[in-house]
Length: 112
Length: 116
Image (cartoon, rainbow over all chains, first blue to last red; front, side):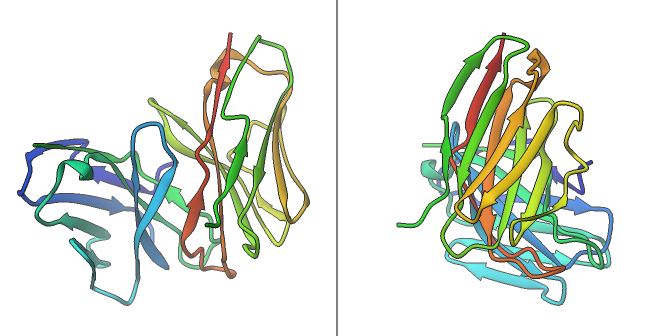
């Protein structure tokens, strides 16, 4: 069963704009991760944020985590056509095993 | 450049045939995960191992699927007999995890299975 659910399912923007994707989850977590998948390829890890962190940055990526609302957001600033991909959040369950469960993803299209 | 290697990349087979997918995790990693990806269900966790021991295979249809790690450099996922509904892309991922803390996963490029 999916632990994380991304929103929106699809997002289309113009190059240079910012893209925001959201993830909601159901149970308490140890950490939340974001991954990217280009069409026909494997997933690539972007960023990991722990349950005691509220915000994390990596280059043009900014991730926030609100454990009280059980939600996270991924912001990509100054988007490029090469950012076109599907983005997934993944969570493990606090107090349980370390199995990582993925949401269904947000398909981002950045138009040149 | 360390990476997870999966074989075969593409497999077309007929219903009822046995299918074996192989994965070579990154050297030094202690966790291995098998996922299945379809349009309808997204990424489903089938099984995972830590230090070669199976920890959870609750996502796997037990009657036809089996997952093993005969040694630290090889993980296998077997389907016998295969059915058309098994058609999907199967991903292997490896990482360095501790109990209760998964850490970052490195994914292979996937094995695309088509069962006719």
